Length: 263
Image (cartoon, rainbow, N blue to C red; front, side):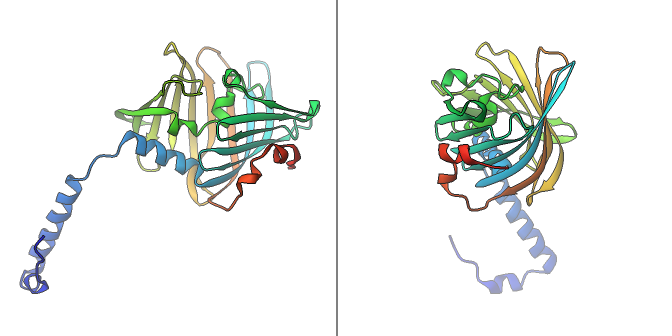
């Protein structure tokens, strides 16, 4: 490319020079490629979890006749390592779940046992909630175990969003055959997610709201999982504290550690 001497610009009036630079920047933007669905989903996952994350949560399992509340802490590192610890109530205190690459386990103190989560158990309820083992422990698999496609752009809850379908890859160890995500354009937060089974029937809907700055980034502080065909059933997760991108060793995410974690 021919280099233009600086002296050439000195002879151009200021107003014309501004127009020249504006047109040049506009042309560069026009030729840039649109964001891919995979990039949007990957960036959304990083927005939610970072390179590492810690959160302190309250989970409320809401039914027509009763409500049960648990307090929890969770840690994650990258896409492959995560841990969830129940800190209250007393009868569940110390229970924990671990994901390490493709393997997952539950630690149940009351029976002093570590239980391996087989692929057939991924669809089972986590601690009686409307979240499955796959939703809560294996959540980052949305990046690696699915193919992604932008369906449309749509306004949701006052936000401009990309609507992306994630279709499970063949033989992927996941529960949902299709996941539809509404991802906010400004923040990359997943404000709504729909989960479909192998018959393409809607099973659960996840909605996130009350977005605040926490741990140095924007994130929803309230998330609801609502079953499609169970009137009056839902599970609410409220986030009280969060931290991101801190140093944490891979050895933290171990079966030995899940047995010894304290609140």
